[in-house]
Length: 157
Image (cartoon, rainbow, N blue to C red):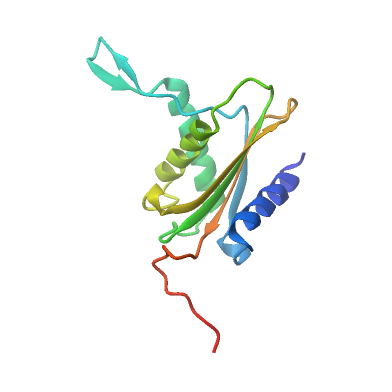
């Protein structure tokens, strides 16, 4: 599947959870190549008597944060509620924990300054899909106007 096809699928799923897509200028979508990695738990180090995050998790989170920044470009961060969809294409049927996959994406977005805080995400959907030849993560996000929005809804007169 091409990056353009990935974007089309992700946008269709995002429209599905939102009911419709907002103005295209408000939508962010990108494809991150490579096997999706779940967020690993912090580990205890007896040497330092403290917790640390595994290096592979840190590296993947930084890589995803870079993708978020690149996809955002000069667009300002989201200051209101947000909807996010992630498609995790994996190479095998090996068991994956989709909520830990999503946790890494959410933490990377926070690191990238996509939003002020990940509590702004009021709609979230994650899909785990098999794609042996091209594992990747596809992310789409957009503003989500709803009952928790801080922006007043405008009605037509």
